[in-house]
Length: 233
Image (cartoon, rainbow, N blue to C red):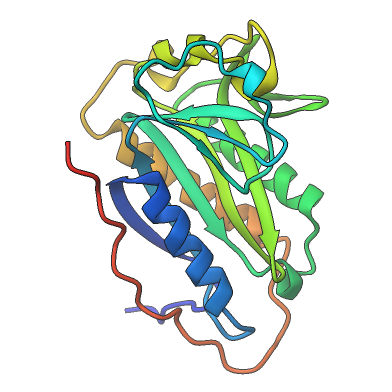
């Protein structure tokens, strides 16, 4: 059995989770992290919610109905999270990796493109509009924040979900922007969300090899945090 590489981020799967609860735990992780804390990549999905980034304008909320709207401290405008969407939060020590925010955005976008290529979907980026697109439609969105040299928040990839709520907003602040998802291009299957999560983690870890962490003493695994509580249906 090979030794565990503790210089590589540890993936953690949480499943369907309440946005506010995960946000609170993410802030706690970053607040308590130090130079020896092991990085993590959180994989989950959220219960239906619209989130507004720090620069978010409420004019981009057209008719949200009964879906809650939360103001977040991430970057970006407005987006929707819901069941069947893969959300990933890479909690990375950018200072230790000597990585800037622009490099992180590009790395995440390329990891998403790699992951989609793994199931035969040809995706691309669009200059001046962060995220990943298939043709004219957006399939993945990014929203990040840096605290104490650590990245938090992350990305969402539409896999097998109800895209209807995106018509109730101007996605990412772009009126009329179309959205798409993985099952628009490949057959639906029960484990698709998990499979896309596995592909994404593999792609992120491979891309992160270009930014190896600098030596900073003995690294330890991050303190054990209980899994985020899922809101009751």
